[in-house]
View 1 (cartoon, rainbow, N blue to C red):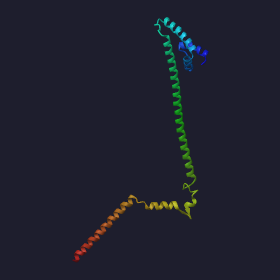
View 2 (view 1 turned 180 degrees about the horizontal axis):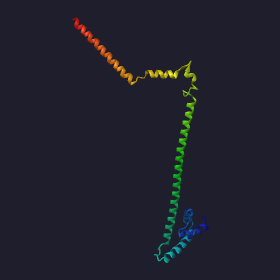
View 3 (view 1 turned 90 degrees about the horizontal axis):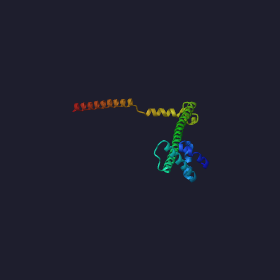
View 4 (view 1 turned 135 degrees about the vertical axis):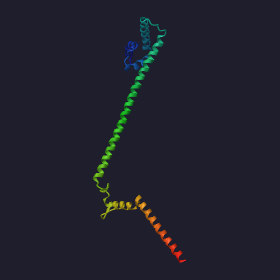
Length: 190
């Protein structure tokens, strides 16, 4: 901020009407420019003192301290507004990026599913039958189908297990009957 611009904001500062976008620059200039700071102090002492007298208020004993307190308050207020703006921007940007990531992931998932469906529907019964035709069918013998049949034959269901136990029990009863018959024959021969 230039000297003339800073001096033009002296009265608005005393009235508390410095625009928000100029407050930080005004405070920095006043803290760094001794000439402008002295002019601000003179005007501040005159104007605030006259207002206190006009309103029958107690007259301040240290206008310099009051001026520094008001400058610090304005600086703090400007910093807070800047932080809030930055925080709001950061929050908005983060939300925007997260929403964008979710939308992107959803689109990728839909594209993947569509491609998989297209591949599967265009390739018929077997997913890779067009590219692996020579290896799947050797002289009209379907290796995959035959492999599935063999795998199904080796599976033992609960029904097969129960049926096997019943047969074992019947066989055991048959063996016991034969054994008792042999005992009866042996007893009869003695």
